[in-house]
View 1: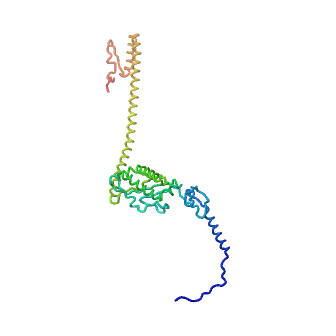
View 2: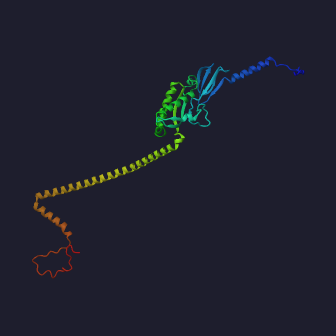
View 3: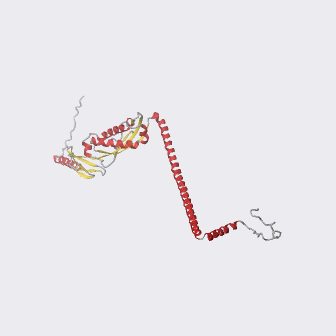
Length: 327
């Protein structure tokens, strides 16, 4: 049933005067105007100023002023900071809204050129190069960069074998993928400069992980044995070369010695020959005497007996004398 109870109205109520209301409205409007007429751009960013929704200018870091009450609006972009996209994994606590994908498992699942499956994780590092293009030429530049990066990486991986992807071809893949991403970003006018592409974990699928680990271990053992063999080679070859050089130098020294001795003997013989030609008898006698002076001391004690002497043997102590060559 409706309530017909009479209500009591305060007879002393007085509405505020119109001037007071206008003062409050003007004060609030003034505070709002002052509050919205300045802004600050961080040190690693740039501000894009829009006036009535249209591009006006780009301002550098610091304190700036603008037209209040929504006439000017400012979008601050981190143009001086390196951003990154992560594929196949993500780092907890990230601040970039497009840094991580929606499905890491689908992103990292790829097929190589030899029709093998691989799980590829990689990182793309980039900077906002042109703020105007970044805001107005593409609706979602971060998401577009993510899509074209995944497409470029799948194309590069599809041209390589699984062995190249896991072992020796990682650097070539990074360089080629970086080149393709830079060209695509420039073609689509994203206002983004791709700085680096880095492969992280590259693994085969779980069912064949054990087999790939064995293959990798065998390859590592092979490389280790090759390195050991190269070390032994580098140790043995210089040593053999040193010994060969030493032998050659010793032979050369012996050759010089023998040649010099032979030349000395020839010179001596030539000198003697010249003297012999001048005085044969004197030179012959001199050579005989010099030769005998060298030989006789080597023959030991000798007794020379004249044939004309008689009865000498009983006097000499021949019993105690030692004949030459006797022991």
